[in-house]
Figure 1 (cartoon, rainbow, N blue to C red):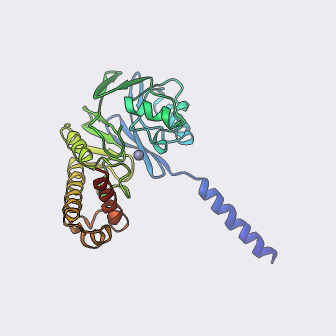
Figure 2: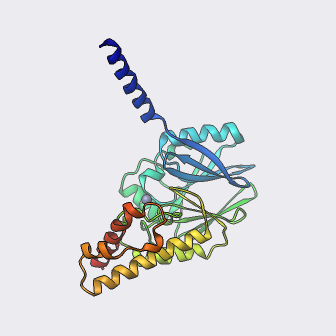
Figure 3: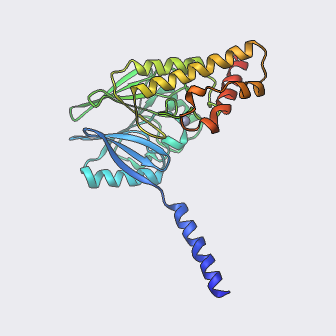
Amino acid sequence: MKRLLSLLLLILVCQISFGQTATRAITNITGDLYRFQNNGHYSVFLVTNDGVIATDPINEAAAKWLKDEIRKRFNQPVKYVIYSHYHDDHVSGGKVFDEAKFIGHKLTKKNIIDNKIETPVPDETFAKKKTIKLGGKKVELLYPGKSHSEDCIAVFFPEEKTVFGVDFISVDRLPYRTLNGAFIPDWIEAIKEVEKLDFTVFSPGHGDIGTKTDVKEHREYFETLYAAVKEAKSKGKSLSEMKKTILLEQYKKMSQYDAWREMNIEGVYKALSSE
Ligand SMILES: [Zn+2]
């Protein structure tokens, strides 16, 4: 009995410690541009001789780990933190970067304040475009219009031909559940704006890294989904009928197809109903 109890206790301790262990990693994208992983969340950072340009801090523990690793590996302070959009699972914990200047879209600033998100309010904001230069390197910020939220931006590294964008474009994976916002036509246009940039690598906030072709495929998925739901709605089809008939089979190989296809239909249906 005693042995059984200690075995159970051991299992419990293992479960607790596993629960607290975050999967964190830094991987090189190209040149001095790196990808930072904290469990299912990702951001990127660019190393220069005058400091580091970081993006989403993700959360306080993640940001502390990242700050230490950057100091150990590159011996550079983080001089800038760029927010991808205001959602707290991506921007929390920014105060860890106490030497940095925070940059975000003007709507990101407004939403961080309005939603009392626990992270520094941007020191500098922009409406359409902004360029940040540090140590001879350059980052271009672009606001492509409303999408997953009203404030998602594209963070473009021209020399590295890489775009970092969060939650409004994913690679080989369906958009998240019921699509969060109700900005579907704008969302499609926003992806088209990103496609105009001269890049070869797309680094999302969740899931795998991809290429420009993956970004195009994501936009085409949206267009197909939107057109199908719009057509079914004009024919008076109910939401449950749409879930049974709009199969989007050409996208079956994409991840979360089984889990999120019906939710995606519901998201568009609701967006159309509120238009
Ligand atoms: Zn989000």
